[in-house]
Image (cartoon, rainbow, N blue to C red; front, side, top):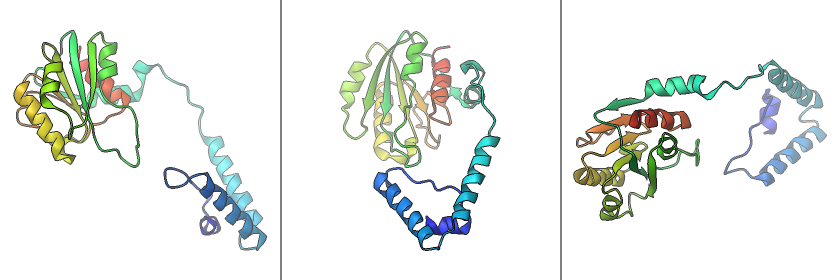
Amino acid sequence: AVQALIAGCDALCIGGGLADEAVVEEVIGAIAGAVGRGRLSEDRLAEAARRVDELVSRRPKRKEPSPERTVGVTAARRAALPDGAVSVGDEAVVLRIGAPLSIAAGEVPWGVAAPLAARGVRVTAIEVDPGASELEVLVDRSSGQSLVMVVRDLHRRPEQTRLIDALLARRPDAVLVEMGVPGCRPAPARAYITTHGSARVCGEAAAELLRP
């Protein structure tokens, strides 16, 4: 941190799972010690603070647009691509198949259960561990209802693919929604939606296709 400031860095980003409050205190102590020894000048710190303040002051004040007019919603609708009979009935079981977390993104909400329910569908949302879930239980839970299977980066975990293939063998009418990289569409998937993302607006765009 001290070397970065000496080299001309104006802001230090410290935090996340690998840096707790103690690390921040250690960095502060190192900076204060460097100033005290004359290795880092107070002028350099003042310059860094001034440049950060100037950057913040140039940021335009943003007005929150209405949800239906945001660029994100428009982009999500354009990116969501349906193929096949993707519409669901009045009742639907939504299986969200567990996916690995990205270190950058962390644990964030994703899926289509909530936006689909907001469109008037009676949704039964089930979190599925692809390595531990019982196929017969999932098939029985969805009996007589539309079945939506939501995945993210299906190609990354073989157990996900095996579970989806087994479910499609029993429910070929199920809709598969890919909310990650669409690199692995199972051949039996007759009804398929790819959203090219798992943000909230992507889930809303998929729900609009599932329940026009």
